[in-house]
Every structure is written in structure tokens, then in C-alpha cells.
Amino acid sequence: MNQSSAAEEKGRYCRFVQTADGNYRLEPVKVPAHVKAAREERIHRREVQSHARQNRERAQAINGHSVAFLALALGFFAVVCCTYLAMQSQAYSHSDHIASLQAQVSELAEENDTVEKRLSVSENLLEIEEAAEQELGMQYVDESQIEYYTMDDSTDYMIQYGDVE
Image 1: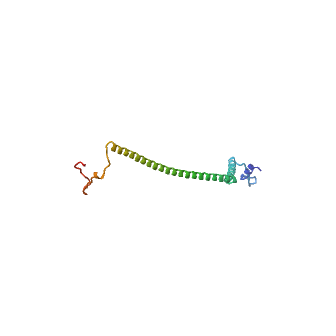
Image 2: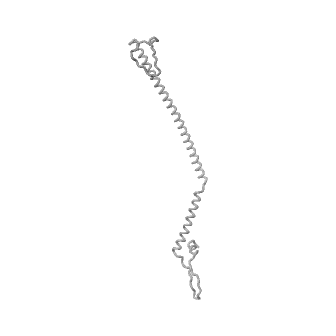
Image 3: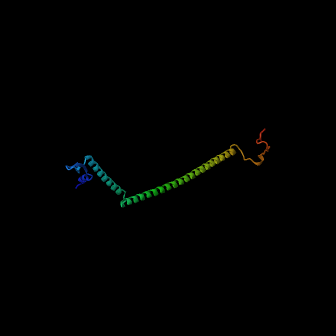
């Protein structure tokens, strides 16, 4: 018996037929096409669901190749993360070193400017002193030329009424 005839046999359609002696008996009738189609559709759906379940189980199963691949991927990810962190740490230390060198450069530049100004002022003062002594005949002040003035504590300024000689 093949599958289609087994499906027809299962759940056969029958009708009551009255015999000549007045009794009733069941007489098989042909199964309607829509019922056959519905049965075939249910059978097909069960087969598809069975195959889908088997495919899901096969896909969810972890085999040796999957474990090896996942282990390699995890190892590669760990190496990449460690390398990234090491490079980031190195970049931060380099930036700190660069900042300290820039601070040193700015301090040295400021000190250099101060020394240059001091040198230029001292050169100018020497030139001014030489010109004052040689061209104008000026001399350094001695103690006899200095006059001291006293002020009252109530005022904080002094008014000059005459030339100081």
C-alpha cells in the first residue's frame, strides 16, 4: 500500500446505504478533493517542520571546527585589544614627554629673552656712560654733592620753590 492510498484509507468517508432487507450498512465513498489537498498540505507542513527542526539542531550544534574558529577569533581579538592598549599608553606617554619638552623650550626661550634684554640694556648703558664721560664731561657723584631733604609725616609729597645747586 503506497502513501496516497494509505492516506485515503485513513479516515475514509462512508455513507449509510439501506439494503433490500431494511438494514443499513456503511458503504465507502470517494474522499473529496479538498479533504485530500488539506491532508497532503498537513503532511507536507509536518515534513517541512521536521526538516527545519533538524536544520536548527544541526546549526545550533557546536562542533570542533566551530570551537577552534571561535578560539582563534577570541585570541586574535585579545591580541588586537592588548596591542591597541599598549599603543594608546605609549601615545599618552609620548604626549606627556612632548608637553614637558615644550615646557622646557618655553622656559629656555623666556630665559634667553631675559638674557638678551639684559645684554642689550647693559651694552646701551655702557655706551651711554662712555658718551656722558667723554663727550659731555660728566663724572660720578661723590658724597659732597648729595643733599638730603626731610619731609613732614603728614604729607607724602614735596614742593620745590627754587633750583637745587
